[in-house]
Length: 146
Image (spheres, rainbow, N blue to C red):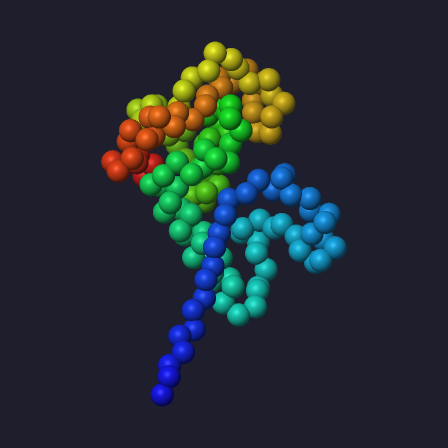
């Protein structure tokens, strides 16, 4: 007797909702919603979403995946907000700053935020992601254990 395995494949991606035209989706009954407010879905889809959320949290603690979600120039405040959202927790900003600056993953830019980009506070120091520093630390312990 032949046995058939029932396999489910699910993928997740980090996307900027501003890159998508919600009005196009609404024509088909689709819409963005806050992860904490996902309605009851069919089958085991809520379990799949929860698993993806947990996997994202684990990944964020080990790799700098969040930097891809930020503009090329960002503030510490924007970075903290991103990690708070991904980890679904409040982060001690002083501890976060100490940890992130020890890694050399941030490159300090010679300019301040103008307040025009989403989530930027005018006058805040701008930074960029230092990919070379990350490439050097690959394989070692990533410091985001909050």
